Image 1: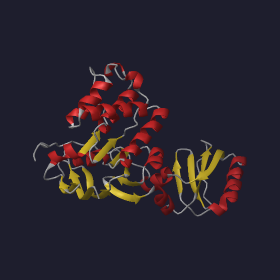
Image 2: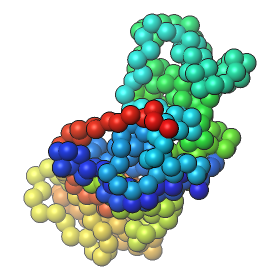
Image 3: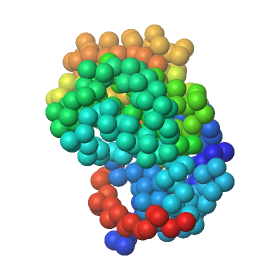
Image 4: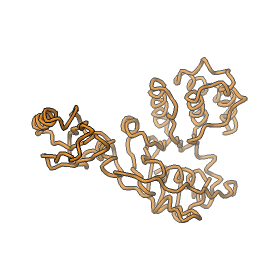
Length: 320
């Protein structure tokens, strides 16, 4: 495995246990999703991998190199798109992408070739020579991705890369992410967008309160839920008693929405039950469809509470 994380724990001085004994492994050529709500410990994990935070305990190895003992090596082995916007005002996308590529040691010719390919793939050529101060948040986000991908390391980490990006270019971005893996990089995708994660990753881990609570392919995680279909009911806001499911499967309630697990052979019965609730004025509408990764996530995580702000304790990443 290209990235191996074992028993990784990070406890801040405030007592917040942001990561709690995490075990993860990612291979070259793989897009691996790290899924979790805000405060689940995703960004803390990534910051430890790239050497910006020192773990309390545990180990991180990239391509056989010990990142805890030699955090400075992470700069050579990793490319990183942070969750925050990159401060590139005063530079054009052409300049920003080219500068990062050369700082990472790529030749001018290779940087120019890869930059043009990324610009074309993301369809942002019309802004190539515009000062970044005049760019929209979505275009800046795409430029930041190109900066991470123009001279990619063995491990490419993308922290919420689609924030602010329009739907059309999000699809283009996911294609570019897949190409990074096809070219041999290991890609760690950090997100809380469950729908996009399902489309884009080969494997994923679900984090909750600093721990991995599930790991596997989207198909495997959905199969482990123990149901094949999802009936979603929009209840009348005046309804106070939640209808009991007649199917003996998982029920998740969120506001006036009710999600009920349904076996495939009970699809007809599910529709009949939902229609009876409509006639009785209990439900306003319903939909029946296949189980999604979002259903798995909600069933496993349920209601979440926001943890205290993570007090990021940094250390010298230049030590070799």
